[in-house]
Length: 395
Ligand code: FEO
Image (tube, rainbow, N blue to C red; front, top):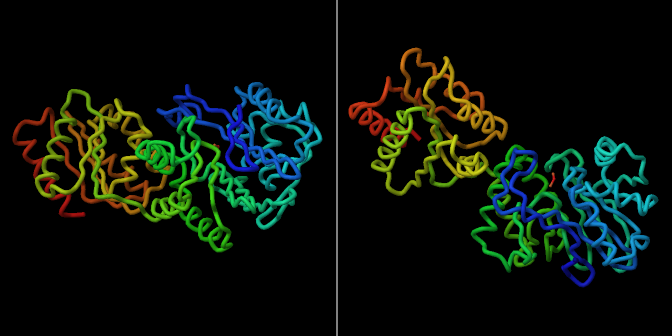
């Protein structure tokens, strides 16, 4: 079933209420997601993006209720990733000659995925397509977040179809930002930014500045996941500029794993020390083996500093801690400081290894960290409290 977005635009996507994991197991979606596809009915009829392949038949059936497929003049593929192009094969079986507008890299990606020689039309930034009363203007958005990514702007109704940018993994029948719970919406929007877009932050800033320099009015931003930004759409653009610019809040996060609770007790004592030295700073603790990794990453993204803890095991660290450090390294967080901690029984390589990994992630090391032998007693916990007090003073 389609939903009316504007006079000429209808949402024809799929809301995926059941989705709990996205990108395989790489991204948790506690609130589901949606694959947004948009049908523009001007003098010409245009379909922008499709849905993920498991829903391809349902998508085509629903689309047929909206329009005779033969009447679709153009397909726009803003992005080739399969959550948006997954129904193309099914669609192209029905309308095989319909031109597909995408970037040069889009052609490569789509051919790489589907191995079909469809009627591709390559577009680049500034190219336009007349669709009757209005025009579509294409803007390449390379590496936001794939080489092929592209935005499409529709004149007249002043709508930016931004694909993944400004999206959220957030299932809702309510369609628009002004209809949903803002706390939920922003939780999903920042999680999406932190986990997917952080590595591309310099490009995000550059692209937003470029798009703003066109001075195009924006009445709505229609992303490819989650709700449409209808009320004050520029708010999410401004948020992206904040998030892309070395974002931090007054927060310190402790992330750790523990075997017999020694490292956990160290984490709690360090946190006590931090709070004793600064009662304004938000301190959060996560056992990474029990917490959702993407939620933890979101908290690290918000932090001005973080501490990573693990006991020593087999001359190394626990895999959950190693895993989160690998994610942090890949995301390339900026403007954060960190240190390591943990307890050990004999060889005790843990804190040194954690410190090396933090260093490899390009994050400033606060100090050499703190390590305690065996299960920390009250004296050791007191050292941890003292360490926490000093840690915040060194920031
Ligand atoms: Fe929502 Fe990059 O796909």
